[in-house]
Amino acid sequence: MLNCLGRLEYRGYDSCGVAVSSSGIEVYKDVVRVEALKKALPRVSGTVGIGHTRWATHGEPSQVNAHPHCDCHGSIAVVHNGIINNFQRLKRQLISEGHNFVSETDTEVIPHLIEKYYHGNLEEAVEAALHDVEGSYAIIATRAGEPKLVAARKDSPLIIGIGDRENFIASDVPAILDYTDRVIYLEDGDIGVVTSDTIKIRSDGIEVTRGEHKILWSVEDAQKAGYEHFMLKEIHEQPKVIRDTLGEYAQATEPVVDLEVMRDEGIESMLILACGTSYHAALVGKYIVEELLRIPVRAEIASEFNYYPQTLARTAAIVITQSGETADTLKAIGRLKEVGCRVVAITNVVGSSASRIADQTIYTRAGPEISVAATKSFVAQLMVLYWLALSYSKAGVRRLESLSMGLRQLPSKVQQVLDDEDIIREYADYLSGYEDVFFIGRGINFPVALEGALKLKEISYIHAEGYAAGELKHGPFALLGSDTPVIAIVAQDSTYEAMLTNIKEVKARGSPVIALAGEGDEAIGELADSVITVPQVDALFSPVVNTVVLQLLAYYTAKQRGCSIDFPRNLAKSVTVE
Ligand code: F6R
Image 1 (spheres, rainbow, N blue to C red):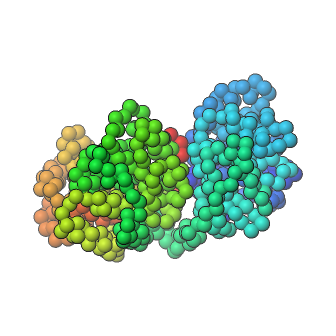
Image 2: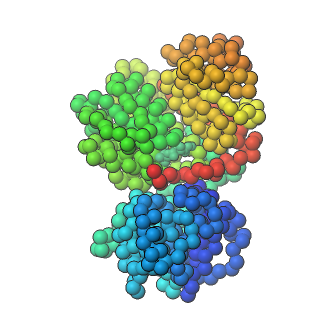
Image 3: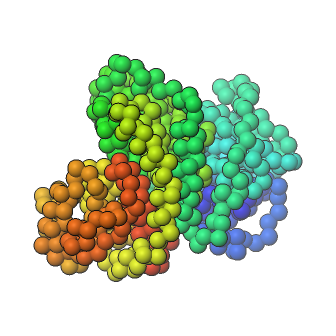
């Protein structure tokens, strides 16, 4: 169980805990990582157990707030992902009925509710408890003396792994890959009752069958393969990820996903929704689609989109989410469907919630991304967007042929960047001494500036801002000076001259400038303090090579500063709360 938990740590890691159930329940939890818990645990015995790694939402990371949580008598234990919106009211009610609470968490109401409704049958008690609960959850409950686990989900992922005389329940596949590749995805409203040799699933009180899936990744895919960090391994996998994602789609003779919405003559615009790094892919997608399809595209942050009335007539909607579980993005899909939009999801996780609620799904073939900072999934998302736009493009035959050729060359161009990582490492050593960094770009490389800044801030904790190069003079100039380096992303496109002017302006304010520029760009060498040369590609593909440089820059800067690269502070891999 601890091994499984270790593999899920990227989902949250501010504290962790386990409960082992036999005739009684023993709970061990603390504000530590799984490795430390493993060392501190006494010998415990039992054949049923639950465990959890936490990403705090209600109550600070502390021993009492860590999961599992128990009822008054310590005979029912529960782990929970998600948020119980009405927990304050439920807690007041339960306290008035004599229940004692010890933590500040929303989760603790669940074991108490189960205790309240328990009349000899755990699954019935769980079902009754969940009737009272509003919000999102994936829970597993166990009760002393009952050799089974009861699991339930709503808006938060949960899978069952089918083993050999043992079964598993987990929130994500890597947890169980050491033991089995046979998986059942629970659906919203399902209650699963799992023993070592039986699995029963009920929905609305009726027994249901959910299909079994074979997981195609191996354990090795979810391990570091000799790299010091998952992030570095995942950055290095990108040539393969590009090949795999394009191989799946671009080389198919028929479109793998029939995007009726894009064929439909009535479609006049496109909306792409996402969060974080996936939102930056959406922004790059806006430039790609506008250039190749000549329709206006809005790229929006899902959490913003969710709170305003929308006019979406004749709009094709795409959502991008690596995990397929980001709460804000899932809510956005719901809203889009409510107003009658057909939604295409681009996701990396087969069977994820996004893939189940969207009308169509296009999978990126990035393989499991464990490092909290997204890298290869971003590049895979771009590949899908290039492929989509090229398949439906109105550009001339020669331009299309040249772009197809450019796409096929991308793996070797990215490999070229990786082969030169020692040069990038030197710049990272230099950057690691600063506390503020600006990233600037224009056009299709403006989102790359945002992504470069996001990567740097989230793993090295250096304050970094991504800006449209032309915007610096509208305020941020006040922050420039010798202690604020500026990374300028320069592409050989219509923005080139304007970018050179912006670099001159920055230099005049005393900031050191590191430019990313294509091979053979001599003008830039005379302006910038130093230049990181990137392989020559069509400007439309420049976000790919430039982003890989910035990923390495962030990685080595964080390494130089001794940061926890795969597990940055306060973050989690999938953000399943709004
Ligand atoms: C940053 C990062 C996050 C995610 C964001 C959306 O490195 O990983 O910003 O991109 O939380 O996650 P998904 O793509 O799973 O919806």
